[in-house]
Length: 469
Image 1 (cartoon, rainbow, N blue to C red):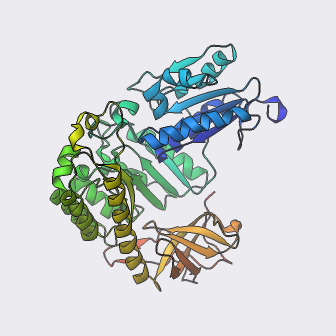
Image 2: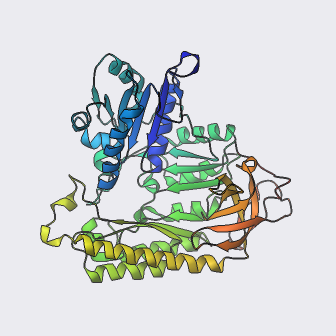
Image 3: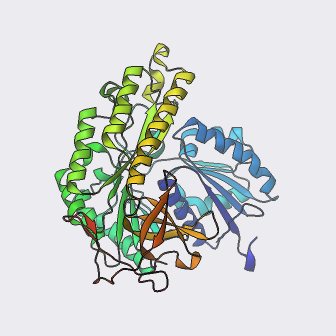
């Protein structure tokens, strides 16, 4: 029990940014009913583990964690599993972990307070029904302290890639009304936040029946106080000319796109049911870079997909080099029960040794390319937003508009502030930098993309211009 007799709740989050946003929704729903969020599970009245099901490793990690949490539970603690793994396994989780009282899927968070009360009365519950109308518009999330806000604009997915469990765990695609998203953006600006990240499984396919993703970008970018606008994760098929024009015209849109490729082989992409070819993907990259000069790209890649040959993998390596990604999330294929890929012939499965070898080669390719590009940036200056303390005690971690991490010497008092930083060193993946004095600009100055340069927007550490939070 927390201070003042209010029950306490601890939420532990695994997986993607959508899960992080859902955890904020859960905390909001329970806070509105008198619960106090706490930072550790020890002694908490309610412990919720918000889960990911995208790979088997993620699920095994959660199952192990559920066992560990027993030692943190009091006699009356309620332990619940939420999120995608809860949706996929349902009542199986109650059988596999008898100390779990609640299993709640992504559309069931509204009912959490009442489900917890039922659990206190001894009722173990599974709530995994999909609700195509659920967007939690009347629930106010309890946002984690930070300098950016994650804002879901779309739930579910209609693409049904053969390796992906998301349509099973999050249901069909549906989009929030544009006006509701914009209202939430105004709310976060009122809290002092200047950067928002729009979330969706295929976020650029957003359509509320009246407005598309281009309309959404323009509307959010026009909210007074928004200095940075990001989105994740888009699908290569959904970058229409309208969306590209909105990205080019909306100054707040940052010069970074996370563009999942998954494979550089057309043959493998077809088996994945990605609905584009290698050539289509590379053409999308060219269109994005033409619309937004200086654009940085990151991606997701899977190796060892059933039927992937050494020649297919070689095409992935050459695609990585052709694009010049700044970073990549790389994975071995993980079969997910119920997906089409698990029904492919056993003879087409790639051995663990071959998949691991390919993963190592891919990681080396990514790191080598990123290091070369980052060395070439040394001596240049960039706008940075200070996000959090660095692991080393005499520095803070900041991020550029194109999503590069820069460590600058300062203390936590400058978190949430914007500066111009000169890049002085690199480990190959991150940078060190120093804040440089700049001319104070007029209000709203930002990236001048036609000139391909960044205007100065901050001053030195002793006289910060802007603060978020």
